[in-house]
Image (cartoon, rainbow, N blue to C red; front, side, top):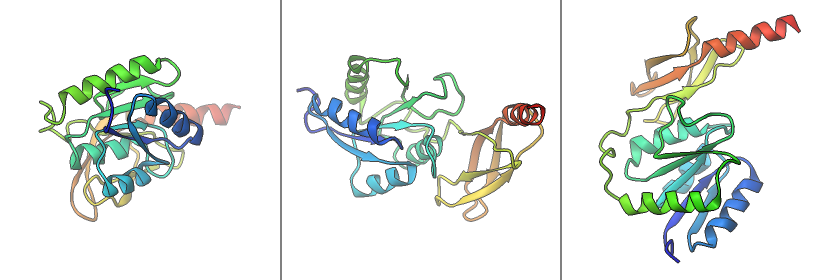
Length: 198
C-alpha cells in the first residue's frame, strides 16, 4: 500500500463525512486523524503534524478558509486539499494545493492527488510564500463579520464596506499582524433585498 505510514488530517464538521473519509483513506494504508472544525484542527496539529490536510471550507466556529490561512502561515510545508460543496476552485482566497467539489470526484482521483502531493513534499517551490492568498469571508446581515488572526488566533469584528467583492487588509487589534481577506458585500445586499421583498 503506497500510503503506508503517512498521516492525513481530515477537518469537517459533518460526522458522516469524517467517518467515510477515514474508512476510504484507511484502505490505502493512511493513518487518519479527524477534527470537527478549524479550532479542533489546530488542536490536532499541536499534537502531531500530518503529512497532508484535507479540509472542508464551510464550518462553524472557525471556517476552513481561516483554518487554512493559519496552516499556510505556520506550517507552509504541509500540502492541503480543500473540499467544498458551496464554493468552487476558482474562488479567490482558497489557500490550498488542490480543490475538489463535494460529490463530484471519485476516491481514485483523491488518491492520485494525495500521492502526487506526497511525491512533491516536503519541499515545495511555493512554500516560501505562506501568506499569498487572503481569507474569504461571507458577510452576514448585521453589517459586520468576524475574522480570526492567523498570528495570535484571536477573533475581532470588521465592519462591512459598501463595495463589491474586494481584497481588504486590516491590522489585528491584539498583535498587529496584517490580516488579508476578501469580503462579498454584494451577496449581503442581494440577500437583504430578497428578505425585504418576500
